[in-house]
Amino acid sequence: GDKVLYSKYAGTDIKLGTEEYVLLSEKDILAVVI
Image 1 (cartoon, rainbow, N blue to C red):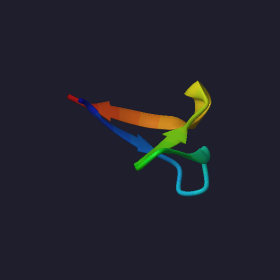
Image 2: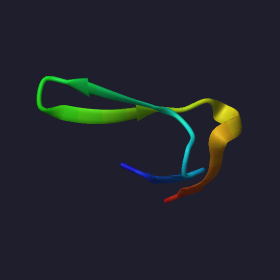
Image 3: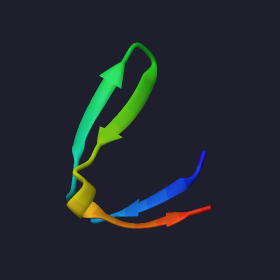
């Protein structure tokens, strides 16, 4: 996976089972590091 940089207060934290995710809008993504 790529690393994604996003604003500190952007997105919604979601937990599915033991995995944690952050859902982001495209406008909140600052950069994608490959």
